[in-house]
Length: 136
Image (cartoon, rainbow, N blue to C red; front, side, top):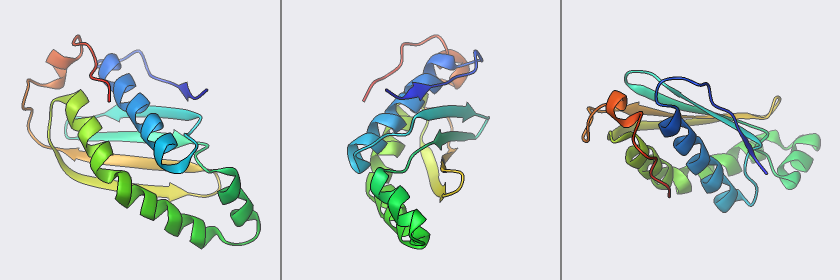
């Protein structure tokens, strides 16, 4: 089972919900979710750091010098699941996503999903901090 880590900080329920949604979506799209996920929220930026994301097959390809192929495959996954990730962040934060940026690193096995946020539509994160999280 994936380990979701969160700081006991402002908006913790929202950050946990975003982390959980990202882990669930990555698992659905790639067949294996990351073992660690942490969401960070700043005024106009939400970022999810995911660790231990690669499948056994992707690790095997990396060992055989096919890292660029793995990055290409990961880019295709991100392009395909981008709309679902954006929807999860918007639903859980109450704010529209203006831009989505995604990157993977092979050694160490780390990915970052970042969302540049627009103005709040259902109140700001201060109001959402106590709200029950929206699940996808």
